[in-house]
Amino acid sequence: MAHKSGARGAIRQPSRIVRRAGLVISLGVAAVLLSGCSIDNSVLRFGWPSGVTPQAERMRELWTWSVIAALAMGVLVWGLTFWTIIFHRKSRAKDGEEFPRQTGYNVPLELSYTAAPFVIIAVLFYFTVVVQNYVHEKQPDPDVVVDVTAFQWNWKFGYRSVVENGTVWDGADHEREEAMLAAAEAAAERTNEEGHPRPGPINGKDAGDLSYLRYNTVETVGSSNEIPVLVLPTGKRVEFTLSSADVIHAFWVPEFLFKRDVNPNPKENHSDNVFQISEIEKEGAFVGRCAEMCGTFHSMMNFEVRAVSPEDFDTYIQARKPAEEGGQDLSNAEALQLIGQSPVATSTHPFNTDRASKEASQADGN
Image (cartoon, rainbow, N blue to C red; front, side, top):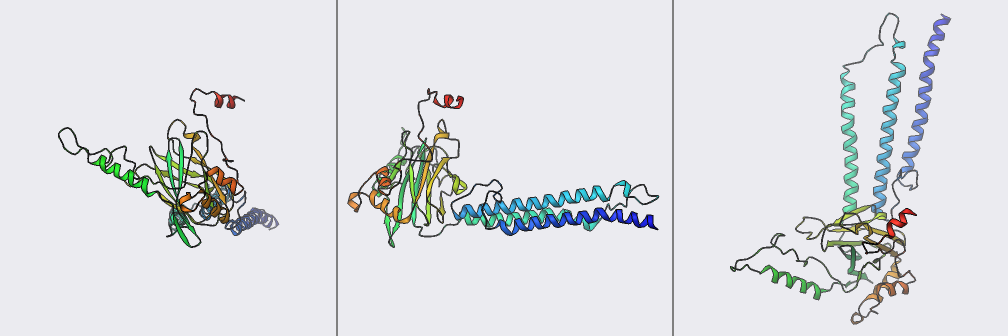
């Protein structure tokens, strides 16, 4: 009897260890779950970068919870694997049995582990759609509307409208836009030698029809010698309207944590070229990049978002407005200096357009 009691004690010992290990793992997972929703630190981001907008934070939370769910599932799978190895090995077979008791064809169990993945996928899909809808949400009457034009290999930014003291300032350059539209209409009336209409290659439009582009009285245009700096206010809803003057580009600010394709002829390409961010949560300089392979200098097609206080932004806009609208008609660099900001980009630098230059390879070699 003493021998049998000792055997039972030896059998129960691994079970006690497994229970204690399970308790420790459960407490660890619970601690992460309780803190994963609101705390943004390098551990709970699991490699995800830190953003500066509420949309970026919601995406970070989705990533955190997804990784936690994956870790929990991994613990469960590994736990079941080791449990099977330990408690269903051949040495556990009873006297006279070749193998331990078999549990094949357990219909309830098989239905459970078949249905579980579908439930997991459905839950992840639901929360993904919720976050995606939040990121794509557009509200009427944003505080600032920015027209973004990408071209090989730089950017043009203009202010379509800005809310100032409860009134909306119209920054559209209607004269230029009407001239572009008139040129496009004239091109659409062209005929061949026989006098028949000659439709263009883009839904009947000429390839050089750029009437979909938008122009503004206050614009910042980048060049190979100057990185364009887009000045935006913190704490305000900003809307971006994206268009390309040539090939497909992409508008990407890493701190926004997502990119948007910038297409030529957005309507004909059935692309949604408008998106919003509810606010930029902190001041600073944030590099922006083209994230779509667009040609020779794609990797150098950078810009900078300069987030400033609402008060400084109002001063900046007033300084950049044309004199006929009561502004000072200052350049982008001069207006930045006026509000105590660096007149040039601080997060990136211009590139050398000389294709024969060896600077890049020499720098890599150093």
